[in-house]
Amino acid sequence: MTRSIGEISAGLEPSRAGFPLTPNSRLHIIGVGGTAALAAALHAKALGLTVSGYDQALAEETATTLSTAGIPIGSAASSAVLATCAALDALSTVAVSKAITSTQPNHPEVLLARGAGARAVAVQQVIADAAATRGGMLIGVAGTHGKTTSTGWVLDALIQSGIDPSAFVGGPLPSGLGTPPGSPVHIGRDAGFLVEADEYGGNFDTYLADRALILNVDWDHPDIFADRHAAVETFARWAEHPARSGVLFINGGDQGGAELAARMSAHALPNVFTFATSEFASAPNVDLIAEVTARGGGAFSITLSHLSDRAAAASPGLRGLLLRELPVGLLGAHNASNGLGVAALAASAGGSADGIARSLATFEGVGRRLEVRYDDGSITVLDDYGHHPTAIDATMETVRQRYPGRTLVLAIEPLTYHRTAALLEGLAKSCSAADRVAVAEIFAVRDLDTTSVSAADLAERIAAMGTPATAPGTVLETAAALLPSITPGTVVLVMGGGRSTELAAALARGLTAAS
Image (cartoon, rainbow, N blue to C red; front, top):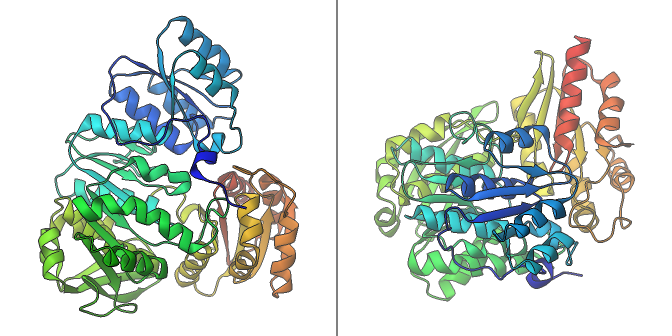
């Protein structure tokens, strides 16, 4: 059974367009360790607000980032922090992630803050308000898969073009982009703001983007989307603003993207442009088409072979890329396709052909996207955020290309019980492409029922497809179970959106100690 945005957002004000933040006002963030919540805290602090926060389980690096920024954090009882603010009669806003309100509609800290007269909003509202405070163009990147990497990539392409907007990206930014380093935030010198626009629970509704990119639309978040068509409906709602008043690029080579583009076309929305690689499209039905060339080892280049006149007018920088073979630094055919969308969006926001070309070739990606955690030449450990069958397929294919002939061991931590139950067969099929699989305990978030499925259920399905699979326990127990069996010639791919990065770190520590 799916839930509505109202149920997911219980107790919070409805989403609205961004409005400038008031310097020196007080903001308290519940669940400040989450990526979007951390970004809201850092952006608000940089704009002169007095910010505090609370989280029950704060990662050490996140605590350090917040402390360095001068943001006090409570870790035992946020009520005490809120009571202090209320006693000062100064708390104006409390912000919270919908991951919290979706399972705790009467969250005590939210109730306390509202009782003290404070507004209660989603953390995305604070980010939208920060964007409004900065002024300039609002640029959004959306899609079921690849939006974190692509948002960081657009930021890099703009900076390499001499344009320096502020940004929120849903993962750790690479060296030179994060403010502070490794954070999901960039504080730019120029007006303009770039956001990763997340579809869950209408999170992106507050981002009325002037320039937008939709990479794909797949069925995910089965707690709110009954099927892919329901997801398309949600993306269409967000896409309407840039389609009417700005510029919108949609991946027409993606099944869900093509469905969305057809819907936009049926409503005669004027500013919709489609892109695709030549494998999935042909002119004149698509505005941008690129030929993809394999360079070996999972690397690709793209050549923009077709550019419609209307797309060239919307993104002048693309003219300088036409018919140029452009090496793509990030591995995988999916990144070649996403790179085309990145180029289109960056060009529409003023990016230059040379700056975009440099970024396509040199951008190193964001944290936890095929991140190498250990490599001694014969054993490699990779850490990746992917947890959906489509993402697992693309990542596994890339790893096979990058490490041909190596034994591929997949260690996966499924993300949420409801997703695992709904996508169980697809997850099993995708995971079975490895040579061996270890399934860690399911990471629970936004789950109302934690009994519907188990890690052992997934392992059994994988084994039934002919691939050896086990369910050793927690992420640390899974690492301990794997270590003795990792032999030279093995690539261990760790995937998951919860605590799986701790599994990768434990493997790296164990292998280093044994070397």
